[in-house]
Length: 148
Image (cartoon, rainbow, N blue to C red; front, side, top):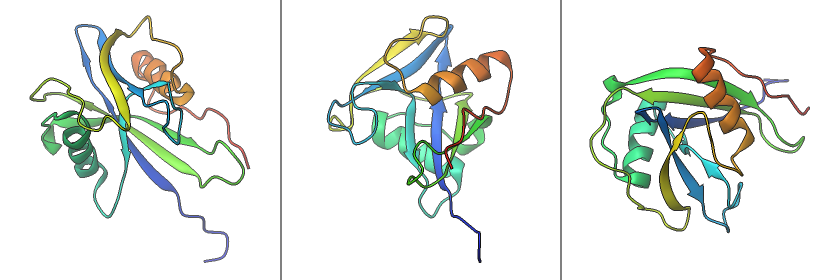
């Protein structure tokens, strides 16, 4: 197993309606990017990525999504700091869902809001902006830079 490094798998929900994308404002005390806007996201446990996305959407925002109603639309491999584990960030689009976003984890997210995809808020998590721009341009992959 020499040279093998395990990657963290993150799932992200790209939810768009009427030209607007759903973003959450991360709690200022969050361990990662506190006070920044980000799509709904979570880390895979011992589960399929689509199942993780469905679980996170319900846990974080009360949205009900069927696994058959999601499609992978963008991938972002990244490592922000040399001591960080490498991550593979998977962005899924939900084709259908039930419910309106509600704050279910106020210690992680303090607000959900719909933003025009052409006028995203600041500050926004940089790889989130890159992924949204990639999705809008029809690209399926963004490699924002790699720290060894």
